[in-house]
Image 1 (cartoon, helix red, strand yellow):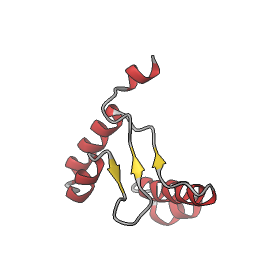
Image 2 (image 1 turned 180 degrees about the vertical axis):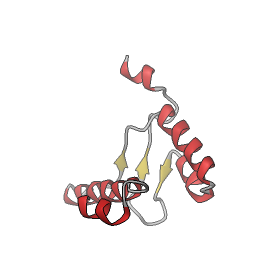
Image 3 (image 1 turned 135 degrees about the horizontal axis):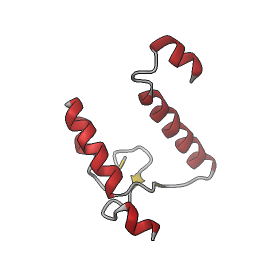
Image 4 (image 1 turned 90 degrees about the vertical axis):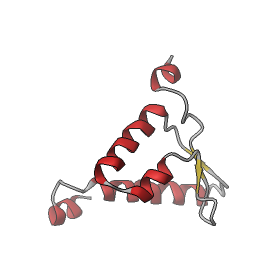
Length: 92
């Protein structure tokens, strides 16, 4: 990650972190022979992602981030079971 930041700077490097994180989840799921990845994204996370995608004008990501399950097209499926629960409800 340090070498990426040295090449592209601090702005926009979050994209690479997301890619690395998803690759790590995929590799771990493969080792465990999992058939689905379940994340802890909640309604607050989804709202933040929707706003960022609207501001960026990123329509494809906007459509994906609002789905409960993704990756049904051959990729390892991912699910967000807490999508409709707010963070404060989960923490309590």
